Image (cartoon, rainbow, N blue to C red; front, side):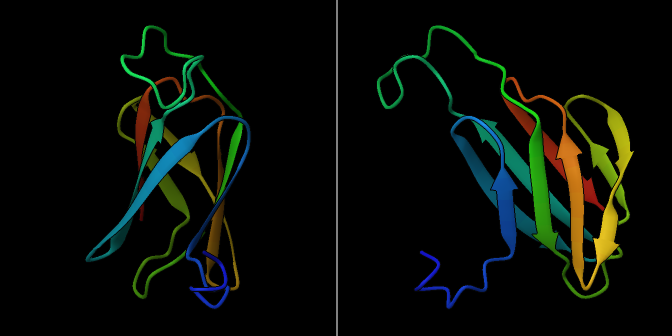
Length: 105
């Protein structure tokens, strides 16, 4: 995938588990939806148990007009700050059970 994208991926995620990520842009903010697919029978249905994973380190290329210093986690209700350098925002999720929506402003 890196080759096809010419190594210009706008998102990097480091940490344990199998995480599905979807990145969206809206005026003045970036939205990252993370879904934890980690389970004992990965790729088999149904999921009988949710396995918490973390910490997860997120590195996100900021769209134009997004400062990226503030992170609001909609599912857990937490607010966090992010480090911003050279157009990239870096923050951490301590744990992920099922899913999380991170809104960067």
